[in-house]
Length: 285
Image (cartoon, rainbow, N blue to C red):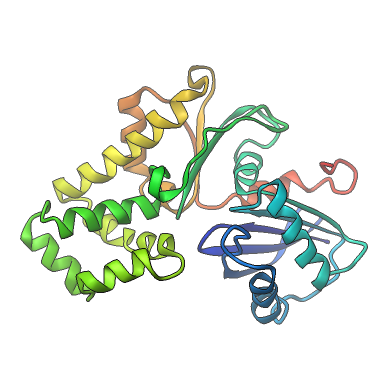
């Protein structure tokens, strides 16, 4: 039995798999070592994962997460060792590698994440060879839910959208400008707050100004990130809630920038279960 976790900034998808089949799936809040302490992550496991988990003795744990850089991954590994079998094989990798393995398996391709945040890479079928830094939602993260929310709020508060759309938004989200500023600049996880506004865009894509906002932001993601790879020789695959729910606009953006779209999936989990089916015979060291 193996335990696979795919953790973004908003949620963590935990999957118990055996012989290549999913036997249990649990969702908890996101665990990001860049923003959270070991105590925070440990509390999330204790309170929300372990009470639901049928077995706390997996043979191996593969944790993929946002913020799991080389130095931060050690913190996550220590937390996992605290709660699980001491002899279990534990591998902690970036969410970008999860996307690449889940989308491409052992084939080469360009893998993209478009969820609360965004990222991309060129993957050779074994490891990530090129990665344009996403830079986060302030400097980058084009195509992400956080940036879509940021652009939406900026246009609404600066009266760049029709009054009826502004009125419709504030009926759905009864927030004052002061409350918005507080959530963005003072409260923790502003990226989650901003991304939580993206459903308004999705539900109003028939509005020309909103369609234009989303399309241009997707084109910016492709132009500023994906087109730095050798995109002419392979397909571009996408994963994440934004890519999945906005797939028609994403394909429109790809068509306008000359990119060939491959898979568009909401989650990498099925692909990861297949990738790790051979553990321990062919696990990645």
